[in-house]
Length: 193
Image (cartoon, rainbow, N blue to C red; front, side):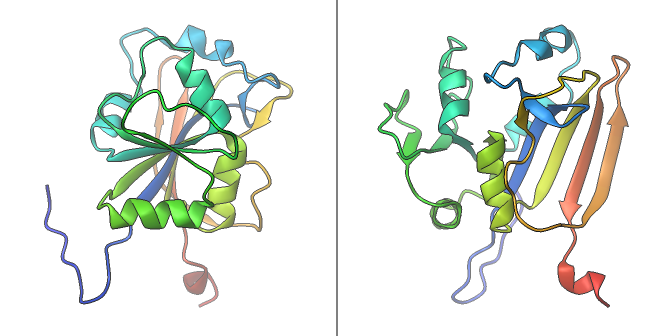
């Protein structure tokens, strides 16, 4: 682990990475929340960098619909990770490491930073991701574009605010047609100079 120096009175900012799969037409799930369209791309020898990514994650943030979808997987996929679920509903936590909160995105990020959680996966859904983006909290996007056109569904980013310029950090094409794109937001101050 690398040394992070804390300047008097400040705290290192946490990274919030939106790591997600999307159809070519920009949907992360069907209109009813279905993800069966991803099945032909799962279970093979290729993990698209997931194992390395999850190993470097300190915490996971998601909305209630994503949480409920994960509960249907059988085994809890985030065992050993701290998880924050944004929800205004009264949900049961599946694990002691799961926090259900009605807090807004900025408050959640302040809590994560206060707990020293530096690398956070924004696991979805699209509306929650849109809210974090609208508040300027997403520091990176790792988007796997799946060679499928859904026609409609849950958008990659819900009502997410103003235009944002991104810088391509890396791209990788896989033999099955998936293209993974890694972007980071550009500082608006550098765009105007």
